Image 1 (cartoon, rainbow, N blue to C red):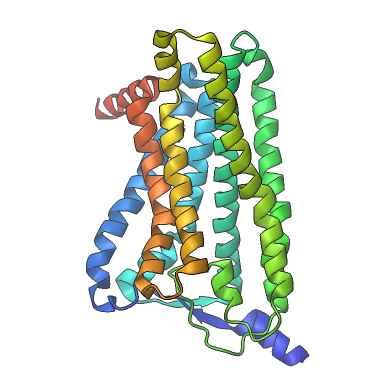
Image 2: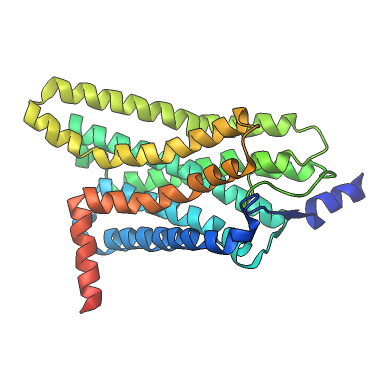
Length: 314
């Protein structure tokens, strides 16, 4: 058994999958994927650079936005090599340890993104309900503490989930159904009992993404109630406009995540490429759209980005 376990945890090679049934078109499919990756990397890097270098953006709202851009960069980089490697060079092999590492970072940046969206909702609630104490409550040191706490929470919650995969034996097919490593996808290849893994995975995601989504909804209920109780129609419109970017970002982040969960649970009869495309949408679209949304809808970010681009030209 120990010999089998050694092979299982160190020598196994998984095979990733591109878009099932469309292997002949992988080169063409890679073009939009490459465009999305370039957009995500450049867009989030530009937002991050603008917030770091422009003193006018050293405010709580933009600090949280810089965290969101960091998670977008991390999520994009986590999947870039394997996804484009499949489409460009048909490189499907990934070692067990590399698969676990990729899985951890995908989950970690997903959890971080969920946390940051919640903090941004709390930021809007504080700015609307208690503007006089806003800067006193959300100080630079407190925001730094919030960021560190989020990182620690992600590591503590996700490490056991990923580490427990080492104890499993993988004696069935080693072909994964996506172009990167997902926790449920790897578990399905095991020929040993995975009930503990499933329970730990559920335990890891419920207190993070699950609780965050509930608190996010509660935050907006409080925001709506506060605005309706204290503001005139003109003020309501102005205040709600400050929340538009965040609401659209939440929708773009959560709709693919919920769709992927439903497809995994109830869409087993759906074609394989449907699972793949929804999974890729879940990984790629939020990092691409978040910097675009905030650049278009937030005047301060738009001005800072234009200023940086003009300075590069001169």
